[in-house]
Length: 393
Image 1 (tube, rainbow, N blue to C red):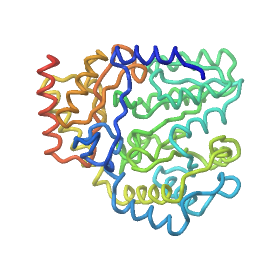
Image 2 (tube, one colour):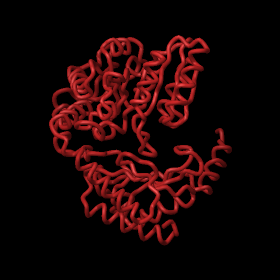
Image 3 (cartoon, rainbow, N blue to C red):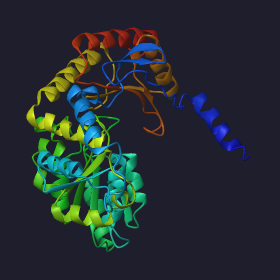
Image 4 (cartoon, helix red, strand yellow):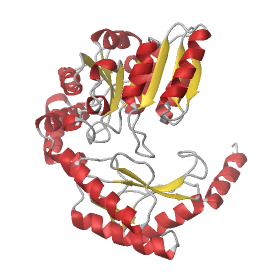
């Protein structure tokens, strides 16, 4: 049997440098508090922004769907795997996102792989923000188009790359950006990007995985937040964060979605969501459409936590959203800080290279509407104690 010696050596190097991922196993459902490895801990690292992952209405919808539809779709969507419940979800998402149509696929990661290679050819050019998510990067790698990377959130650099691509003879220009950048919590400057795309007749695509349920009216996302819905050509989203379930989708014009139903490989060659997942996601969309109470609570919690952390002297970067990076910069220090937090009942993971650039290690704190003020105060006190112990503040 092959020994994979080089992998063993690399794992050892990762452990010594503080970059080894230590996967924690949850022994309870998602919520403000969890049981992990037999220990009760405050959950500060879940993407469950609105606390919907264990919501009673979503659970009931999933159970009812199993009784009605069974446990699996039984085939890919294009053969015998499209149920009316899938179409109901796509219609509800289109209304929520204020677009003509949507296409639901297995994950947000797959959504980028569904779109990018399907709508580009070797005659085209893709222009990507340098800090875009791995799913965008992998989607771009699957395309034969020319590739240009522009400086993070720098619309002027984007324009220079657009000009370069056009001068090189690119037939179609596709500009791609995250809406909310998941590690730093900062926003894409959409109004400026819209202006540049209009000037060069480029397609604008936004991955709004961390914007839905967070930004805009009732959490409709970053395009709604900036009032540029009609100027964003393609939105990619996920159902696994604020919506509390799992799955991904593409939102846009009917022509775009009709085309993707013929050419998007994750849609064509892999089964879609189970009935339970689909029904839970549909209930989540309806919940957000009816009320923005959870979105408001999420923001109130985030503002409170950030203000207290800054008062203590912590560096929380340039976040404009509930994502709160506690910047420590050194990977070993960040790993040690995370371990000490866990010992004190706080589950907040250290993030280092390659998820973030070298020298940019941090504790990534994810605030939720599920947290109470007492929960946040408990976390702030623990951060203060350990911050002083490790001479961070």
